Image (cartoon, rainbow, N blue to C red; front, side, top):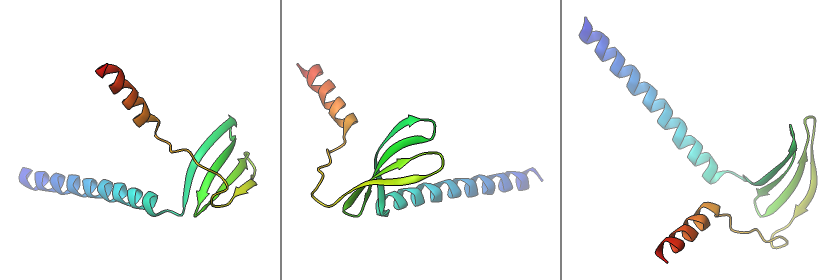
Length: 101
């Protein structure tokens, strides 16, 4: 009887791990092949802000409030240069250089 409970508990744990793994890989795949990417978001208060979205080769600047979302500006390919966003890598390199000197 206890062996049956142990086997059932093991199967349940296996299924739960399988569900979490599937969710993790789906999220990774969705972000990698998604059509849109949030470049930046700046909040001006609760449920108010401005976002920059990259859609294909265009960058859209959106103003958002609690009730609506409005397109403020569209930048075409080459019209706007985006900085390479690597704050952690830059900070780590600075720390490593300081440590070596």
